[in-house]
Length: 116
Image 1 (cartoon, helix red, strand yellow):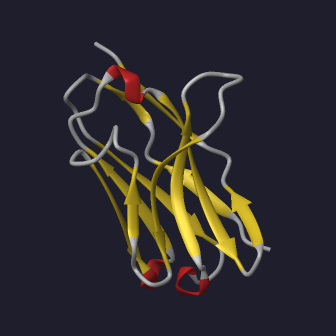
Image 2: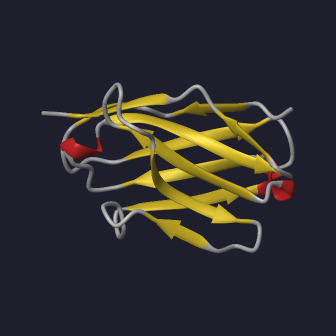
């Protein structure tokens, strides 16, 4: 069982920055896959934002390339999402996902609101 706890969300003005954190209860170096997803409105599907695999490959949604960066600190079992140049359309609940063996785990989500 893996528990994921996101933090760092909040209200920010357009053009601003936020850094989200996802703290895992287990060693993230054993996760085959970790990443960030978001749901922009109730009823919409969660969409991929940024992910990395155990081999170090990263993947970003086209809409966030050049603005968001995913990173990790294995010693702290934490994954980060640095978000720069935020836009109103980035407003969403952001979720952390981890895959261990064949099981997927999700955090509870953290709200990011981009508004003036």
